[in-house]
Image (cartoon, rainbow, N blue to C red):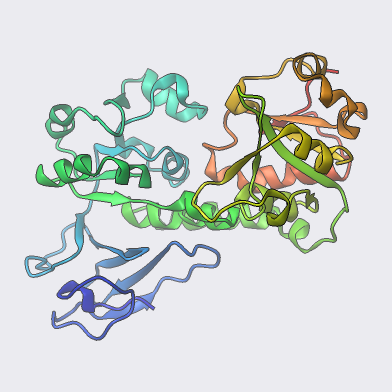
Length: 368
């Protein structure tokens, strides 16, 4: 459990002794069912303490008279928030689903790269603006908007000078890690963090529970025995597949399918990447008889038909799933709509159980 001592001492660990600051004792641990990359605790003084893999954030509520001047080795975030700069695209849907999209006014992802309708509408209504790449944002504009918080993905660690500059300008930086969760429901549970940050805890909890309830029967049901592969083919002709401990592979398993690759099959090294490249021969050997193939068309562009894909890569015509018209493609919103995990699992379950699947939001079957 996270405690309060790190307010005055080094933050090298998550667990330490009691705080020397009166009122900073933990009064309630906010329960999390799936998320492992962050914890949250309510403090006796009304603040909330968030720990994201060793990085500590003190969330100070609106109209609080808590003195944080003696707090060290932490990032203090004062509520309420508005004109937030969000450079973590995976967080935007969570923020929107918590009912706080109007509190974000700046992003590092351009309009055409968004697959979320509400985000595009915010652009269209001049409520959201692009302020440059995460590695080279428009500091002058961000500062002119009185930005109270910058939300970054871990990509910011490749450009540490940006984080340092934002903090130098007095803008707190929160580095989020929802994409590091291998459990799709853990990614969904990060909505609770954004509920805390934007004063939308009830809305966040409601969204989370509704999504979990949608797939209760699927999660407790028996597997279908259907084997599936998730892939795309890059410009070099190599096949890019998800690692077996990735959240996409986990969604396949949750939906009642069997992900076709094991770590031994892929011979992958330990790193933070969710995908790995293999030669077509290896892919053919493992996935030739798979019941379902899911092509990641979000990466390489939408596929008009199976024949178009086979014309481009003739070897795919020999695959069982292609012959039986059981190749599916992803829509653009699959990876950006984090709260869609339950719906994706439902759609995968429909595929594995051969149910009517004409009205899907995240997956589609291209014409033969």
